[in-house]
Image (tube, rainbow, N blue to C red; front, side):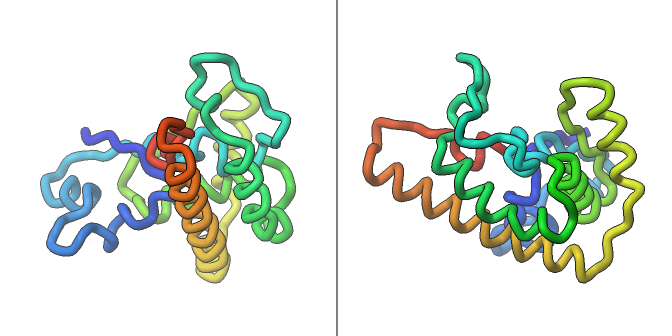
Length: 172
């Protein structure tokens, strides 16, 4: 089994988007008959929209490096998904999990949970079908979110090279 961190913010790394001349991990695994497991499909919870500017994470929690500007960007760009699919964090989790399963259909998608109710909600949410138009809409929203997060990280790094906020690579 090949295990890789992947979520909708990683779209360039998914099938059909590998570097020119390189094979993406999912095509490689399929060609060799190896299973894949995608983990962190919710981007440490960022894609659920459940964290706000007032969110506090304990020291040592990888999410403690998620900056307020990152949370603000996510909240802003997840708004269209909330308006179309529901305002509950579980609605956004369903969308992110569904995207991972759609983009990597032969993978196991491993999402962290905090309690049995969340596990049940994640599972039940997968019973809700989304149309191709829905997935196109979701993909467009994630693409804009991804680009703004990358721009914000580059700007922060150029202003304070000694500070290392949580990068998209760490979230995914």
